[in-house]
Image (cartoon, rainbow, N blue to C red; front, side, top):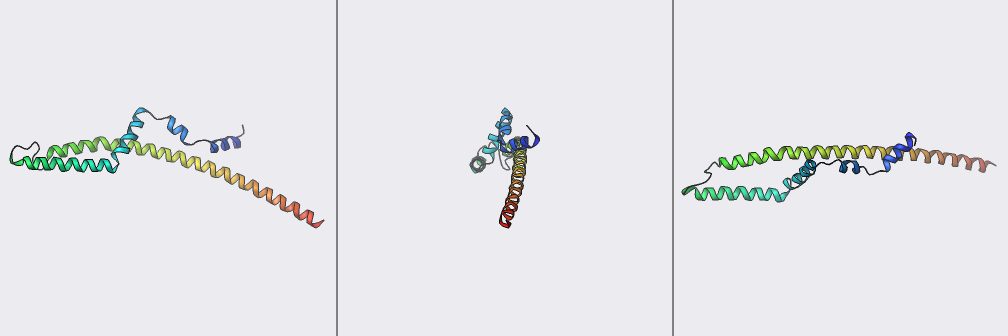
Length: 138
């Protein structure tokens, strides 16, 4: 297979196939966590959790609150969530950037193939025009 044929073969392939074959358990988990952790559903649950936490502890303030205002335990919980969720989201973002890089490479190969085909068509058109000119002169 020539170099030209090899690049044509790459341009005709599925660009996401190598991307999906390489996923480890951690990468798949990071994608799932990122999908959930970046959703409006998760944000809504988080707001609900914070409101319930503040409401229950404010209501219990008169008696014996678990975490009195300024809610240090809630702050610790949210900080731990951010500390765990941040790197997981970054891992997923890095993988998406790699997938985008593969897509850009694939697009480049397709564009190069299309450019070669257009050049070949232009040459063929030019030859056809020259043949028509020759036959019309006769």
